[in-house]
Length: 421
Ligand code: LLP
Image (cartoon, rainbow, N blue to C red; front, side, top):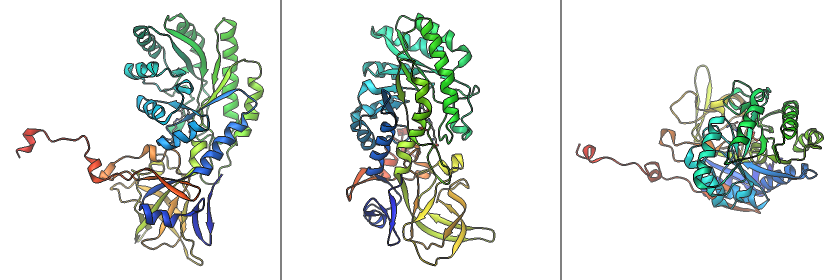
């Protein structure tokens, strides 16, 4: 769903013109639609209504406190990958008994923090991690609930950087060794093995890899149950793709229809970790044109947003549509590179893109920027991170302020021996 629409040639977020947002809050800034966020969550939840399930929103996609709070108020839990994410989730009011903790490198401190917070479970990625969780739980005199993340060796057919379910990836425990690892886990005194987890990659645009992976996991669960293990949860991860350009990804309902027959007889509660599909198309990055720079070989449009604000194009050569905030009739269309002010050739929002001619001062929207956008932002080139604005019922809410120059040096200090210079 897209709730960014043109009215008299001006682009709106819900019923607020983006021009007004730029005027009030400056550019660049992220803008999110409350209606779309809620709609996406409910669509997903509804699609799985007939199956008992927990949605653990993959907060790495967008971890703003208000977005988390909104998800939690709709009933969502959280899929976390760090102590910092746990802190955010708790601050936002996410119920600890709906939090699952994934990631190959959990530290003892993070494990202790999660146990103290009484999260639902750890998604464990190796036997060495199991030992550490067992030790930490032992010192605390408790048992840690865990699922083992199994790597089903299925090609999700997505960008290699966001593909996680192949044998060569660092994630999970290989399907061949899974039974052995589960036996080991059950032998540990401070571990309670409650589930199986898988997540094969992100931005999946086909349903088959989900189904193929799940088939392998179901066979495993049957084998584990045959050995007497009390497997109560099946976590199928996230990964459902969205439309950035011309992709037609499966809808949540398609996923539900495809996986539910496989879940009928296994007697597990389903956990899912959607991220991108909930927030990706609910946000855009609003940016202003600074310069046109025609050269002998190319035409550059230089904007005030850069790779530090949105790194997806640079990192994955990801496509994000770029829409003018004010459509001009009869504007000639040019083939341009839309680039930012950062001192790197890899700093671009779009390459060889056909765009209607723009002038300095014009506003552009980089679309589908609700997921893995602000969360991957940095201060590179000492650029303050940009604000995030949530639009609801005609009102704009600043859910993160623009950073100031002072924020850039927060925590830094100059030792005395350098002060004397
Ligand atoms: N669960 C686990 C264990 C994950 O690692 C991820 C994403 C998800 C769930 C959520 O996946 P989603 O539903 O959002 O596809 N920065 C990249 C995406 C990295 C995804 C990392 N893991 C990008 O901008 O495309």
